[in-house]
Image 1: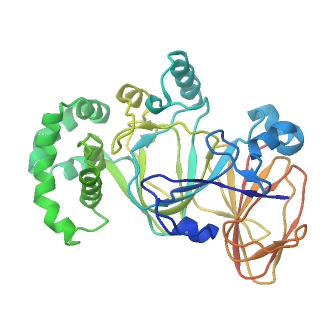
Image 2 (image 1 turned 180 degrees about the vertical axis):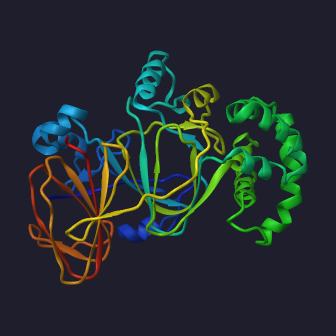
Image 3 (image 1 turned 120 degrees about the horizontal axis):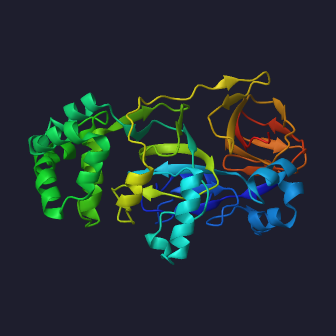
Amino acid sequence: MIEIKGTVKQYAWGGYHYLPMMLNSGFGNEPTAELWLGDHKSGSATLIDGSPLSKWIEAAPEYRLGKGLVLRYGCRLPYLFKVLDVREPLSIQVHPTIEQAKKGYKREVSKGISSDKRSYHDDNHKPELMLALSDFYLLHGFRNVTEAVEELSKYKSLHELVELYSGVGIKGFVSLIFNLPKSNLDKLLTPIIEANRSAYNQNEISKSESLFWFMRAIARIERDQMELDAGLLMIFIMNLMYVSKGDVVYQDAGVPHAYLEGQNIELMANSDNVVRCGLTPKHVDTRELLEITDFTPITPETVEGKKGLDGSTDYIVPADDFALREYKLEKGQSLATPEDKGACIWFVLSGEVKLDNQQHYSSSGSAFYQRPGEVNVFRAISDAVIYRASASTN
């Protein structure tokens, strides 16, 4: 196994302390949002000598990925492992199926669309799993019609939308709000903002209410001098989901979602494709949104872990590109890494460990690349939590 270093992404919505503390990198003035561990072209991890993991894999793909992964996914890792620190809400977004991604990527490339105006940056789908590392809040899929109508009805300025929502359905409603003139949108939203500004500023609105996250989004919009957008109305018709530390959520293609607050591990297909639906100054493609979104209401649920004989916990989701396994080691315990036909990435979340093939100790934020057929032993110097990312080789 070889040690690798992740790529840090500094986005405006990130936090200032969580990832720098984990990586022992010191605090800066810029927010630190994501740590990427993979070989994606937008942010490849590196070897200890600073060379890109992507180039190292390309030099000997069957030996470093595994023949099964190469045959199925090509000369790249099929998954991307991330750690996120969400201080402010992200954009509402939807990810494509693999067929939609191939079609969309080809279309945008052929048209010569600039990167900042594109939704498709590669030809892969992007199902994803998230494991909460703290109390975590997110929007996840559409509420059932009854709940959505009840929420919209709380606000007098939105009463004219309630009947429309019931009549045209979710897709029709989303199409309508994203095509509203700015003046109409302002007329709908301004009364809600002004009626609740004082209560929000005095912490009188609970995080369990959609209104709290509406007002938090407004605070960012006003601070950054952004315009009101239809994503603000989406907050009221989407499920608000609270996820306890250690719980897991799976988000398949077509499911609209937005991370609101907290830290998590994200494991996904190796892609950076995002069709945005609002709450963002970035490109919003309404036509593509209506094309690829699943407008079926869903009931949010978490993924139950499956215990292994070696004390591990597997989080099984309907995606072959990736699988997440968790190990909780007690001080003095050893873990012989299971042999795998495909490449695996190991990540130390907490504690201190030592690999048998290394002289130094490794602590939180450390990551390792396990080649196909390779084995090693982790020795826990203190209680430790370790995660392994892998993929199906069937």
